[in-house]
Structure formats: C-alpha cells, structure tokens
Amino acid sequence: MKNLLLFVLVSLTAMTQAQSKKIKGKNFFELKVYEYKTAAQEAVIDRFLADAYIPYLHSKGIYRIGVFTGRANDTSKVKKLYVLVPYKQLNEIPVINKAMFSDKMVLAKGQEYLNAPSEAPAYDRIVNYLMEGFRLAPALLQTNLSGSVEDKVYELRSYESASEIKYWKKVEMFNEGGEIDIFARLNFNPVFYAEVISGPTTPNLMYMTSFESMKDRDAHWLAFRDDSQWKALSAKKEYEKTVSKNVTLFLKAKPYSEY
Image (cartoon, rainbow, N blue to C red):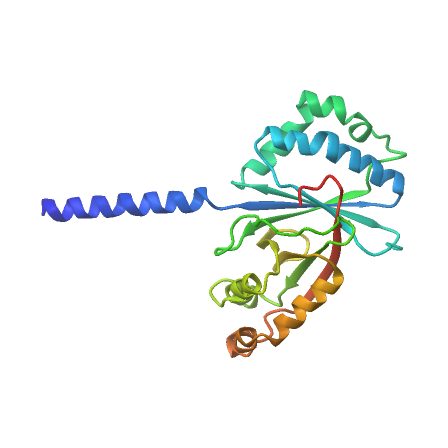
C-alpha cells in the first residue's frame, strides 16, 4: 500500500512538473494594427515605435518585434501598419502595455505621439489581435533571409472558419496533420503560426511566412501546391471546407523592424 501511494505521489509530481514546463514554454502574440490616413501620421507612429515603444519592450526583456506595412502602393483611404509582439504569458500583455504610459523613457521620447491633439491624432484606431502559438510551433521562428528590405516579402494569412468545429480541424491540420512540417521542409521561412483567441474575425488562425522576393514567394507556393504530402493531406475528407475565408496580405518590414 505504501509503495502504491509513493508511486501515485511520484506520478502526480511528474505530471505537475511536465504541465508547468508546458505552460511556461507557451507563447502568446499581440498583433496591433494601426489604422491611419496620412503620411504625417505614419511618421509619428514610426518615431514612437522606433524611439520609445520598442526600446521599452526591450527593457522588459521582449525582443524580435516585427513592424510591417503593405508592399503595394497603398491607394486606400485607410492605411495600416502591423506590429507583432511576442509574450511568454498572456497576463503579461495588459500589465506591460499599461505600465508603458508611466515609464519615464516612454514619456520623454514619445511626447509627439502620446500628446497628439484630438484635431491631429497620431492614428485613427488600433485593432488588436491576441494570439496563442500553435501546439507544435508555439514561439516566434527565426527566418533566414538575406535580401534587401525592399525586396523581402512577408505574407500574412488569416484563415477564417464557418464554425468552431471546422476551425479546430484546420488548426489540427497544421499541427498533427503535418502542414507545418511541409512549410518547414519547403523552406517557407515562417515567422509564426497562431490561434486567434481574441479579435474582430474569430474563429480564425493566422500565420506569417517570408520570402526573398515576390518571385521567390511564387516559386515556393508552386512547390507547395505540387507537393505529394500536401496533396495527400488536403485530399482527406476530415479537412474538407475547414476554411471559409482566406485573407492574404503582402507586407514589407519597416527599417527598424526586428524581422
């Protein structure tokens, strides 16, 4: 009986430690989408991010922040700038964001942005997505690109689903199904894969891949479509119609982006 009790206690301890390691290693991302209309607003946002926001995050031990805008000549009335920030724990996000507005360095270097008048705001709106890294790709990934900032392509995809059940099947398709492995084998240089846990278009997942150029991007997707493993995976009945809407954006990194 004593041996059985000891075995149970040891097993429970091992399970608790394993779960603790799993939770500790889990990663979350915040994708902040600035909406604005003018080049002057974009310049104010750029200066704030480069001079105050990113250094502030560095002081909190957060690195590898990505900042992106559209690659094409944007003729739309509302412009967008994307800021990708990684966190170890979900509860860090509101704490770190709130503390920023009492940080002396931020207050000193971010005056133009923080105190922009209502008649000439630094931006029109910020849309936030909170995301959790995929089970089999929980953290930001290191890309291996060597081209110029102007040539590099960052492809952000959002896959929306018609129901939660279909959404979870698509997430499974990436993880246990092996879609992540295919991207890795074909050298898609992924930045992240994530479940959107809060945002304006749920249920959906998001992921970002990167390429040396648009020509390089097109060649990679051609190889993907012709890949035998992908053909076998996409033919499975269980993964049929798991995506109801695919939003694809072609982005370029800002000069101060850490991607």
